[in-house]
Amino acid sequence: MAQQNGHPTFSSRIGFILVTAGAAVGLGNVWSFTYVAGKNGGGGFMLVYLLTLACIATPVFMAELLLGRMGKASPTMALKNLQESVGSKLPWRLPAWLGLGSTILILSFYSVIAGQVMAYGGEALQGGFAGWSPEQVTALDASYKSGVLQPTLWAGIFMAMSALIVSAGVREGLERTSRYLMPALFVMLIGLVGFAAVKGDLSAAVDFLFGFNEMKLSPTIFMEAVGQAFFTLSVGVGGIMIYGSYMGADVNLPRATLWIVLMDLLVALLAGMAIFPLLFAHNMDPAVGPGLVFVTLPLVFSEIPGGALVAFVFFLLLTFAAITSSIALMSPMTQRLVEAGWKRSKAAWFVASLAFAFSMLTTLSFNNWSDFYPLAFIGLDHHTFFDLIREGVNNIVLPFGGLAFALMIAWGLKRDDVRNSLPMQEGGLFSLWYGALKYLVPIAIIALFISVI
Ligand code: TRP
Image (tube, rainbow, N blue to C red; front, side, top):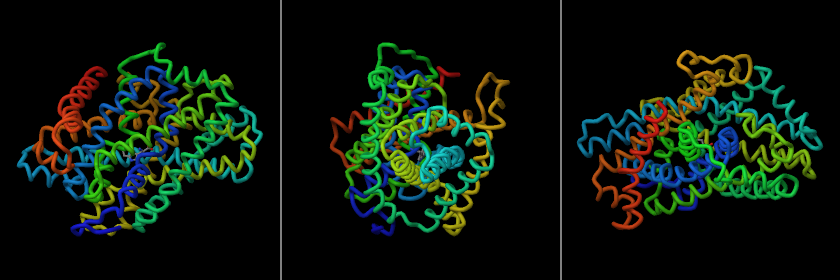
C-alpha cells in the first residue's frame, strides 16, 4: 500500500474501485437481495429498492467515503476530528460507536450464511448437486440447519479465516486478488443467468421482479428496501469510511461511487435472474425466507453439465466475496482497538470471537429456536433472533447511521469545504448530491421511521 502523508492509500484508482466494490459485493447481493425481494413480493419491492438505492443509499455512500477521506482515521476518531474542526457541540462520534456495535451483529449472521456457502462448496467438491432432484436439494438445506455442530463449525472457520487475513494485514494481497475474482464472479453469474434463461421460466421471473403493475406497497416494504439498499452498499456503520480514509487523492470520488454502485447492483440483478427463473420453473415459493438461495441455486447446478465443478467454483467465488465484505465489517472495530494500543492480531481475533459467539443466536434461530420469538410481547411475532438482528440492524441502525452521515456533510460541515474536498465544481451534479443529503435523505429516513412506529 502506498503512503500519502503517512497514512496508507490504495495504489491506483482501479485498485481502489475494485477493493471497495469487494467490500460492497457480498452475500447481500446474492443471498439477502433474492430472499428479501422474494419475501416482499418482487415488483413493488424492486421499484422502491431501485429508487432508494439511487436517491438515498448512493448519496450517503458518497458522503461516508468523503467523511473518511476528510477525517483520515478510524470512524470514531475521524468524526471526532471533523466535529472539532467545525466546533460543533453534538456527539458526532455516536453513530460511529453504534456502527461498531452493529458490525458485530452483522457479522454474527453473515458468518452463519457464509458458513453454509462454504459447506455447499465442500458438498460440490465431493461431486454433490450434479443430477440432484429438487427434493434432494431441499433436504440438504434442512439437514444442514437441523444440526448445531456443523453450522457452528463453519461459521467459526469463516470468522477464523477473516481474522487471519485482517491480522496479517494483507490488504494489498486482496487488492490484487479482487482484480481477478470480481470479474470471475461476474462471468460466472452471467453464465448461470444464461442457463437459467434457457432451462427456467424467464418470463415469470422478469414479471415477478419487474412487474411493477402488480405492486403491493406497505411501510414494511419501504423499510426492507431501504435496509437492503444500505446493507448492500455497506453503508451506515463506518466500514466505507475506512475505505475513504485510504482513498488516494487521485481518485475521482463521484465517479468511483458510480462504478461501485453499478457493479453492486449488477451482481444483485444477475443473482436474481439466475435464481428466480428456476424457482418458478419448479413451482417453488419465492417467499421461503433466508434459505432461498440454498434451495434454488443448487437446482441450476443439478442440471448444468459438469454441475459439481461449476457449483464448486461458484461457491468458492461467493465465499471470497463474503470474506472481502467480512473484512470490511471487521475493520472499524479492529482499527479502533489498534488506536487504543492493541496489537492488530489480538484486535482481529477479539472481534472475530465476539462475532462468532453471537453467531450462535442465528444458528439456533434456524434450528431449535426457530419458533422462539423473543419480542413477541411487543408484537414482533414471527421474528426469531436472526430476524430481529438482521431487520434491526439493516432497517434501523444502518439508515440511522446514514442519516447522521448525511446531516454531518450537509448541515455540519461548510459547503465549500465539502465541495473542495471532493473536489467537484459548484452546480449540476454537486448540487443534486448536496441537496439530496440536505433534504431528501433526512426527510425520507425520518418519514420512514415515523411510518413504521
Ligand atoms: N455489503 C455487504 C454485502 O452485501 C455486507 C457488508 C459489508 C456490510 N460491510 C458492511 C453491510 C457494512 C453493512 C455495513 O454482503
